[in-house]
Length: 227
Ligand code: SF4
Image (cartoon, rainbow, N blue to C red; front, side):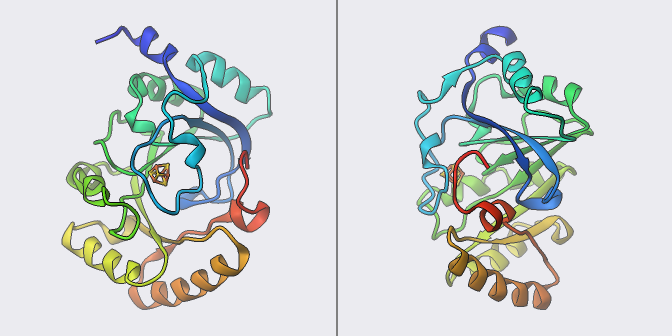
């Protein structure tokens, strides 16, 4: 096991930017984004395939990444995303440092690994995958029990064409996700697709009583990097 400083130094950073949190319970909040490199979940609709190569990006220490983010301006929220952040060695050390610097920290994860660190200011947006997204979808539900036990975890399920909605509602019930901590989010990278799916999903949310998550960054800026 490497010492904490060595594992933090091994972080590979894809992007650092200031924007608005586009998804989940804090959508609309100004946020610093720390996007880590590396993911092998393989979602067909992934909008950040440039993060998949774990050797891509640039090596960074947490302190240098945080300083670069601060230089962009202030924000009340730090979003640590990817890629799959929880596959990173040293992620627990990074999170421990992050909660000392921001009033709220959110981690975007597929749920492939169990929660690595717990803190009152640390929140997880967990997006276990549906069968249409990737052949590895079941692995992202493997630690559901641990995520349900993490009170600061919100489940964000990405809904595209049928049978995604049906699969999501079945898995929510089968795996016992707390409905008040579940959000459904439309999949789509163009205005037309996103608008139509959002309208369909809005009706489904009205019927099911589940919350809907926007994709503000796509609606505002389109499917671009660094926003
Ligand atoms: S888990 Fe996230 S980063 Fe990885 S392939 Fe799926 S959508 Fe892309």
